Length: 302
View 1 (cartoon, rainbow, N blue to C red):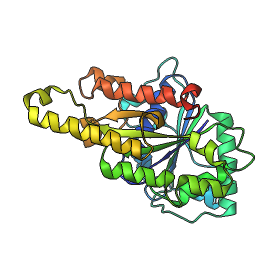
View 2 (view 1 turned 135 degrees about the horizontal axis):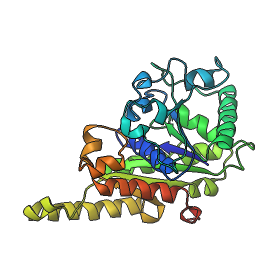
View 3 (view 1 turned 120 degrees about the vertical axis):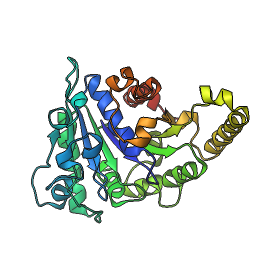
């Protein structure tokens, strides 16, 4: 399965949520590859706490797609992470590999040859891993263009492909996510031009809401006016999401506001919860996203 993580804006939590989904999938016994296609900011190594590639590798995915190396650079996250909690191996855990971008890399235009190399990469990794998570640059990027063209190729059509569009639970992020998918030259327009069937592509897209406030928190009880205001805002956002076709049926799941992620973008382990550093609801949200991602029933036509 190929999973593409997209967002219209930066700061949506796309990368840190995708890394946590990949981690939870691996804990469930799946072999997972994480491809850092955020070419302008290849920092997935920092989220997995691998200091030697925290801003990319010396020769990474940029170099591979550009044709200067024949095989992409990869690291075993559990073997190389500086964080002891991520190095712990559970008996049933699957592999978790990171394919980093180039250090100091930047966006680069697509081309037929680069799309061909993407096709080769996706085919090879689909044979090696159960799930490949491809973290794309924000917006209507060259990375998104290459991914749409590569997945429209006949060689890829037998591989399940799913698209996750991340947005924060705010008015501007809801509108931006709608524009990225449904707007002019958005994901559906670009995908159709690349050769995708529009309806099939839309069925392969789900939205992920991030940093959703918990309305019934203990603090809300002490501030009834604020609690009422939050509920009103939440109702307004639900209506806005429905009008923009980002309603519940089009949503894969959501993550709550999490102080650990706000202060330090990282993978949250079960030990972080048992040590009272992170909230159990956050890990439960990541687990639900991972389950829904691989549940074919969730992906039946809207």
